[in-house]
Image (cartoon, rainbow, N blue to C red; front, side, top):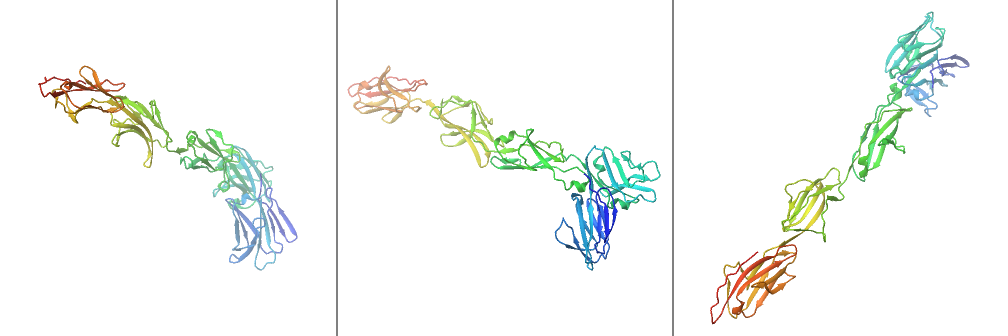
Length: 514
């Protein structure tokens, strides 16, 4: 692709053609008094005309700007000239009726690193001095890369990578080759007898394409589930010269787990975050004229989410939503886990029957080691703490079974053991009571002597037997018995001594057994 800075000058009806490379630079006064010249620098073209620098001039850029505008001074610069095929400038002094015009065409050659490139332009003449230099200008640095002496056998390159091809040497068709080009070879090539000519019109811009820099992905990666994560693929072109690269628009490709996304996403990508995004690695590449960069380092979205529920490994068997266990027995071990990000703090606690919540000791985080259970424990709970405002719980309600030793009462007075009998007088009313603290509700028996059941209660924790009018024959050994499936029977024995009015009763020893 070539666009050159070349000259055709037209003064009124007379036309003089000056050929430089393949484009045309046309200067036409059409009655205007101004002579226009040009200068190329860092991708910009400056148009200069003769006249007073303190005056203002009417300037038009047909095809670039629609309106005529005022310029103070004798110069106007068009930025990024290499993005245009040609630039037409009209300028008119205050006293002129007609505009003076110049048409400026830019020649550029685009190649990739490692290619060989041939550059050519037509010089208006070969210098009478017999010496012609090819200049390379880049990043403000100007250097001669080839010197041609007309009567020599060949041009003299300053580096072996240059090869001067024009024959004969004093030909105005300037042609040379640059081998194995690099980014350092990019820039503006022009010719002349002195360094000042390096910036004049008529040269060729060599654009060397390079792979864009390896991208870096930035953006919001720590995002709550349900929100939008936006990521950006950041890269820069390495193509040269810089005044070309700064106007390059890179294209971008996104990959998830190494697979190209079908949808064109551009430089940024937006994703509605789910839990599954934690399994995805995202990379991107940048491209400049089919030259693709290396893949960026992979990034992962870190989806933030609260626990939906807790999972218990070795789930206990429950009945009526409660875990039944005998007092003194053990529960566990259970492992509790919570799917949350960031990870929840998991701990075990228990409630006592007074409603107080206590930590299980020793703490073993997610594991509940074997725990001895007593009747004061109403529940164990696994607690997953996400933050100060949110926590999830899994509660194991307990049904603690127990069967206590019966308590015996005579006429409302608790009797203790069998060391002495409770004294009553004949004909008095006697209330014999048994109380059994138990879960579940026990079966209670009241017996006298050797296993003679005198009263029984099956659905209450109290049993009461009344002797309306005591007799001497009521004297004896009594036993309260508590019975519950899965437990050994519990007993409490006590004695009753009824004093007869007409004779003395014997004193009997009674035994309490448990």
